[in-house]
Amino acid sequence: MSLFDPSLLAAAEAAIAQRIAEAGGLDDLRAIEDEVNGRESVFLATRAEIGMLDKDLRPQVGRAVNDALRRLDDLLSQRRDELASPGEEQGLSAERMDLGELMAVSRRGHLHLVTQAQMELEDVFLGMGFSVAEGPEVETDWYNFEALNMPPDHPARGMFDTFYLQTPQPGTLMLRTHTSPVQVRLMESERPPISAVMPGVVHRRDTADARHTPTFHQIEGLLVDRGVTFGDLAGTIEAFTSAYFGPSARSRLRPSYFPFTEPSAEFEITCTICAGAGCRTCSGTGWIELGGCGLVDPAVFDAVGIDPEEWTGFAFGFGIDRCAQMRHSIADMRALMENDLRFLEQF
Ligand code: DAH
Image 1 (cartoon, rainbow, N blue to C red):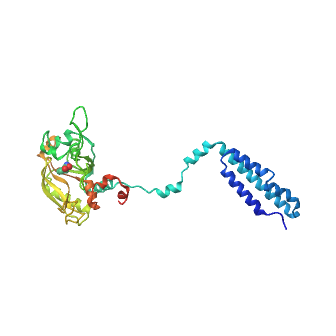
Image 2: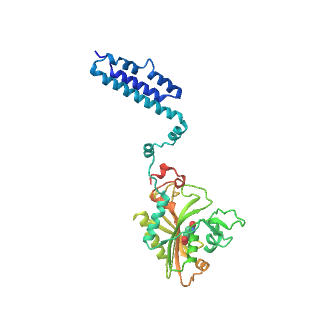
C-alpha cells in the first residue's frame, strides 16, 4: 500500500491557494508562508516520507511536491505585490468596464419622431420642386410681425402670445412665434421666382394641452411667381396631404384670416385618432387644424421690395408636431416633448 495520496496533496494546495487569494494583508501572507514551509506542512511531510515509498514512485511524488510548492510560492509573491500597491489595484478595478453588460443594456438610438417627420415633410416638398431654407429662432419685430403686415398695435399680434427677450430695448427681440419670418428673409435676399419650404422650431406663451405645446415646430411654404392662383395653392396642399398622410387622407380649406395673406384659409385634415367621428383630441369636430395658408398679401411684397403688380404668390405654414401626431395617431401631443423613451422608442 502506498503512503502517498496525490488527491490529499492537491486538496491541500487548493485550500492554501484559496487562503492566499483571500489574504487581507502582508501578515496573513507571512503566516500562510510559514505554514507551507513549517513543521506541520503537508508538503514537507510528504517529501520526508519519499524514502519510504516504492522506488519507481519516488520521482513522481518528489516532482508533485516541488511543483505544488513552486506554484504556491508564485501565488504568494503575486498576492504580496497586489497588497503592496492597493491604490493601483483598486483604481484599475474601479475603472474596469464590463463590456458584456454594456452591450446587453445599450440599444441603438434613433432620431426623435419630430425630426423624422420634419425630414419626411422636407422630402415630400423637395419632390414637388421646393427647396429648403432656414432662419433664426430669435427674431426682430420687423421679421416676426411688421413685414408680415402687422404694424405695432395691430390686433392680429394677439394671435401670437410672444416670449420676448430681456434686452435694453424691451419688445424688440423675441423667440419667433411662427416660421413666417423666414419667408420675409427669403424674399429680401432672393429675387422671384422663389419656391421654398422653411422648417423650424417656434415658441408661444400657450398652455400645453392635447393639441398644443408652447414649443413646437412648423414648416412654412412660399411660392412666388407670375400668375399664381388660389387653385395652385389648393392643389399643392392636396398633393402634400396624400403624399404625407396617404391617399385615403382627406383635407379641407376653410376661409380664415391672416394679415400676411389675402384671401386666407385654414387647412384641416380628418382626425386620425377617431377617423372623423369626433373625439377629445379634435374637440368632437372630426377635423384637426394643421395650419394656415393663402395668397401673399401685396403689403408683404411691398415690405420686401417685390412689385405686387408683377408678382403673385402663395404661402402656407403648418405644425410638424401636429403632422407626426396625426400620422401616428398620438392622442396627446405633450408626449412629444416629455422625452419618455418608452414612448419615443416606438417610432
Ligand atoms: N404663421 C401662421 C401661424 O403660425 C400660419 C400661416 C398662415 C403661415 C398663413 C402662412 C400663411 O404662410 O400664409 O399661425
